[in-house]
Structures are given as C-alpha cells and as structure tokens.
Image 1 (cartoon, one colour):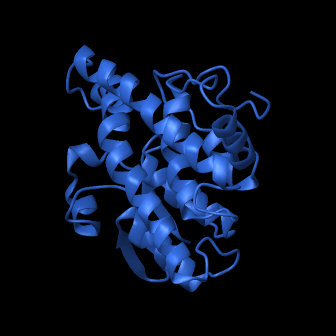
Image 2 (tube, one colour):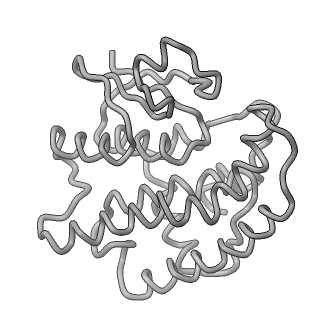
Length: 221
C-alpha cells in the first residue's frame, strides 16, 4: 500500500494529496507529528519535513519533486503542459505559491493561528497576523489578474500551479482567512477546483481544536 506521511492543513501535503487523488492513486494517509523529530520519521526524511511518500518501494520527500515524479510516472491525466514555455509558467507559479505566498501569507496566518497551538510554541504574534492579512490581498489581486487572461492560473488547462495555489488557499479557508468578496474570478476558480472529486478528502479534514469555517466544505459557497 502506498503511504503518505502528512499533516492535514499543510499546504505542501495538500498539494501532493490533490495530485494523488487526481491521478487516482490510492494511498494510506498517516498523520505525522514531524515537530517531535521522531527517529523513525527522520530516517524516512532526514530534513524532518512532511510530506513523505512511500510508493513503489521508494521513499520520497519535497512536495514539488514528488508531484513531478507522479506526473512523469502516471502521466494521465496530465498536470503539466507539453510546451517548455508553458511548463516554465507552471513551475514559476508553483514556486510563487510554495515560496512567496507561503512566506508572506501562510506562515503569518495559518502557522501563527494553528501550528503554534498544535506544536505548543506559544501564542499568535499579532504583528505577523496583521502582515499576513495585508499580504493575502495582494496575492488575491495577482490571482485575479492572471485569471482575467486565462481559464486557469497558468493557462488554458488545469495544472500543478492550480493545485499548489488551491492547497494554500484551502488551508486558509479552513480558518476563514480568505476574503471571497475580493475577486469573483478567484472565487469562481476556487469553486471549479473545489468541486473536483480530488478535493473531497481535503474537504472532509477535521483538525481537533479548530472548527472549519462555515463555507469550507460548501461547494456553493
């Protein structure tokens, strides 16, 4: 059985879960308390991070590397375009969300409000929360600009870029940190991707001590 060591609200784990589900690859989900630095887990990934995927006798880490491995070994349905310039745009946007968005928004909102409590690292820093709340507006506006020109974030087909973005957005939506009134384009995009069968398991997530937002699992939000 394939096995994914994950944390439910981790956007990097969610990106891998979406790709696995989209490609209809069955996997056992194992929640991993990576912050406890368990020796068994560190043997699976010395970096001490999730996600970690056990599949076909391999143990793989780093979400983007995992997703591209899955794309190359299970090419249908495709999540990367054929043309090199289009693939570049997908990879650029994956990096945008997994790096810039993550640092400016996810770490300031999700990590402050949820991760600190779970890992017992203290209370949210209000300055960081305010910075994240301000930064997400800029990122939503950028997504709106992209979607004015394209059907999906990176072009005319749904790609890894959409899953990378949706992974972060969905985790923030769980804690009501997305203003769905700011952009109709972004809301419509998220409604499309949220309605996919691959999203069902994510919408069923429940984190003890943190109740999901009212609209989190609502497909007609």
